[in-house]
Every structure is written in C-alpha cells, then in structure tokens.
Image: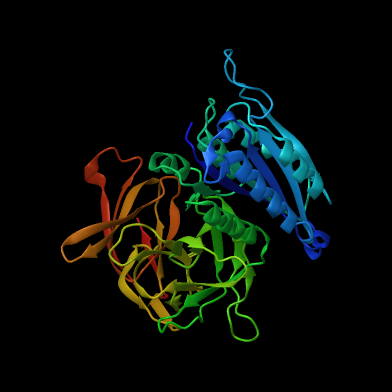
Length: 456
C-alpha cells in the first residue's frame, strides 16, 4: 500500500423537473467517503494519516454547519473487518451518517471513532455511495472520497467512474493527492482531474477550493465573435458536453440580451466541458474549465453570412435542394432547400444542385453579415410519348460527348421530365423490338420555361 492520501471528488446533479422546483433554492448535498483501511495508520507529517484526514474533515464540517441549503453525510469503508489470513473483505463499506439537517455533530463524533482495520475497496464503495442520495428534484449531489492508495480489491474505479458518468449519475471527478508518487498519479488520471498537495497546508487549501466549487454560484457567457472580433453572432444552438464522459450536460439557444450583450447562463463549475456551437459547419472549444464563484467568458470565432438559393422564374421541380460542401472537399456538410436562406460560417463552399442534369457551382463566397444569392436558370419540360413501353435514356450533349442524365420509366408510355436548359439526345427501344437495330434516337433542346414534345 502506498503511504499517501488522495481525495477523489465526484459530483452528481439532480435534474430540475418542475417549475416549482426551479424557483426553490437549490440544495447541495455532500457525501464524505472515508478510507478506513489498515494503511491509514501510517504517519504523514505530524500525525497518522487517519488523524490528519479526520481532523481536517471535522474542521470542514464545522465550517459548513451554518451554510444554508447544504446537507452532509458520511460513508466509510475498510473500517469494520480486519485483514486476516482468510483474505480481505471487499464489501466492507457502510453509510455511517445519512443525509439530514443538523447532523454535523453526529458526523464529527463518528469521525473520531473510526479506526483503520481492513482493505481499500474504492470501486465497490463508489457504487454504493451513488445510492446514498435520497430522491430530490432540485439538488446538487457531491461525493468526496478520501483514500490513502489505490484499489486493493478486484474492482476497477476508473471503469466504475466512467460507467456511472455515462448513465448520468456522476460527472468527471477531481483527484487531489497528498505527495503521490508518479505511478500512483498516473493510476488516477483515468478517473479525472488531478491535483497534488505536497503538505498538510496545501491539502487544506485544495480541499477549500473543492468545497468552494461545490457551493459558489458560477455563471458564464459565450461570446460568438464576428470577423472583427465583436460578440455579435447569436441565435444558434450550443451544447456543453462533459469533457470526460462525453455526455451532453447543457443545451442552450444563444441569446443577446436587451443590453446588447451575450446572455448569462448558469453552468456548474464542477468538471470541464467541450462546447459545440451548432453553426454550419459547427465550431468547437475543448476542455473548458470554469472558475467557481465568478462570471466566466467563453469566446469562439463564429463569423457568419447567409446563402439564398433561387431559381430565375417558376420552379418546376417539386422539392429542389442543393448539396453543400466546403470548397474542395467531398464530405456533405448540409442539404439546403431552394427558396430558403441558410446561415454559414464565412468562407467558400461548393454547391451541387439536384437538378436534371445536376448543376455544380464552385467557390461560392459567404461574407460576414451579407446574403449571397445563387440563382440558376429556370427549367423547361420535355414530354415523351411512345406507342409502347420500352427502354430509353436521356443524354446531355457536350460538344461531341453524350453525358447520361436519366433513364425513362419502363412502365409508362407517356412521361414528363423537368430538365435544365441545354441540348439533349434521346435514345429509345420499344419493349417489343427484340433487336438493337430498332433503337430510335431524337435530339431536342430545352429552353427556360418552355415545353418540348417528342413522339415515337
């Protein structure tokens, strides 16, 4: 067992499900989980590790006694059964003092009576600790786990932590270690953020910081910057993901308030975040950490302009759309409807309009706070009538080359097809004609807004 103490700080959050709950003051519930394993007898600075840890915890409990909307509880592990020749008890954990108002004296008394005995079972204790919070619709649930070393049972604290986070039970933990050796520090990095306290004074300071993060109100604003660096972009969805578990924590529609400033939003400082602003294309900012008790400003470059797609005249297509890609790239970014204005980040884009034949427009420039209008020629219509059903194709004539456009329906003797202006060639063979020499051909021209008739 390593002669060191580490504190794992886990946070759980209750969701606000009713308007009434949202109007009530939010309660913060803090559960201390104390390592009572045999190695806590080891000395650290001027006393045993257990003495140092319990003294600091008693002082902390005292400081929280008159804080409104805060409730405390205490769980311990490895303190009921001694390690024997029969092995370790890897389920030795107990909720010693449950959540209740005014239970500070009970917690301090229990801290004085716990004696180190058994083994270090972190994973199982975390699983049980997650069950210690009574149902609540307006609570912030915080777990602080104090341990003097790494897991000694078969559990995997990292796996338990991640599994609970993915279920939305806990969020990314904070790890505070007392003079941990490098290999132990590495073992805790899979659990969350790591802080190293080298002595008792720094340990107390870090613990105070953790409590401050748990209790202080924290706000943030997201500045979406235009091309000139001004926070003028707005009215777009944005998602805050937990940077560790990758679970979505918050969704907001960005707003500029009546004073012309980005709106203030409440964000919990416990954990770090990945922010995705759902512009087209999206912009991201990774590993955002917030300072507890302060107003935090998060800035991202998101200069945007508009793209409008129009047809010069009546639109003969039933549901005309355009595939939009970043200029020079193959990945489809979005499909935009015609007669619709879509906002994009400034830059150049390639359009593939789903006309017949397709209309490709390269390097369309989107400028800051400007609407770029792309207008294509009005289509025409060709109506093809046959004496019998058959097989046929329409080709676009490009110099001496025929470029396939579409096939005729094999189930109809009359069909109308919307085509862009240009020169075309039709090839057709009746279903009753069993030799290729009976293939018929016809060239025709499509003009905007006009109909063309072809009869075989």
